[in-house]
Length: 187
Image (cartoon, rainbow, N blue to C red; front, side, top):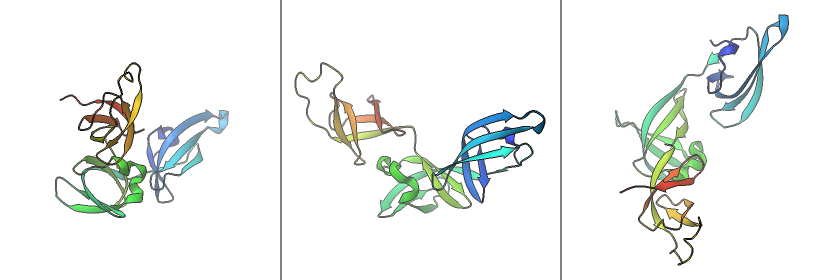
């Protein structure tokens, strides 16, 4: 069990049999009455955010969320298929668990699966991900004078803004947190 002073930002706790991550933590001293902690908690299953106040002697149960490195294999409609690279055991995850990050998944990529109660609740992508440019418009002479950006379609089908010098078959590094171009991968 955790005390209220252990509820720092990033701590994983369990409330009502659901895992939560502490996203904000604010402790207030109340004189003789002890202290209270105001928190914002993000539900790791559905992504909802709640605010909760804990008082002095409250005990909070830590969430038993395990992290496992897995490899993405393929998608078939509403299901994504992953494999544990150590045991070669395969498992399925509904596409809604991954959400918008599905646009960055390519076959063979290593990701981290967060599991709670024997169920995969989230997939964490690497922050920087190399992806091949499939389609990008040609540069018009004179457009390279300033930092002009153009749309490029990557191998996963996602469209991102890239500098004008990027051509088809280039490999670019994408920040998966916001979908932005970082750099062109060096050969």
